[in-house]
Image (cartoon, rainbow, N blue to C red):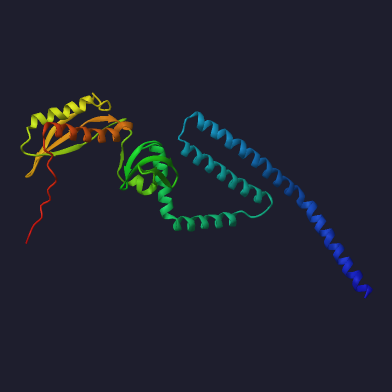
Length: 277
């Protein structure tokens, strides 16, 4: 019994000696690997801060700046991790192969998201609109509140938040109402055929000229759009600044209605033709 215990103790002692020897032999690699890790993390933090300051001085788009800074941060960390495990003596070729295969699988499963990502990059780089612009796209209209990498966030007039995928947004038609700074309204009044057209146009011009939000240049216009079977269609086209557009349209319609009523001009109701069999 004592011989067995001595044998086990002797074997355990050999294992401990081998472990200590291997640890001493491996310790330079271990120490250098962790030095690289800690120095690398500190250097990455410094580089990331410098990159943000440079992009801020260059006045890059905030969304693009954040994306580039995050991309630089994570790619640097990945490179540092590969260097760290390589310094430990771990074979990195199989790790890189596994990482590539995983990237391919993720890319195939996230094709829609990658399309939105590419669309977001195009929007950020070519700037068809900016934060604060009023746009119409994909059947919705709203003010751009945030341009993210995958979606663009709009706030509609009723304060609903709309998320539009950037892939669809970048490939579709975008109407930007804010680029020019001014906007033209296209209003229509349908008047009775008993109306004196010149008098009606003069009344409308008086309304337009007296409204403070209607711009003098470009000048507003009042024209006969067409003569239908039931009415004279008068086209009213005033210009205003973007901020005044909604209130101006409402005021012009209301003031023209009051002016027509005072002058005895009849507004022709809409008549829908119904075929009877």
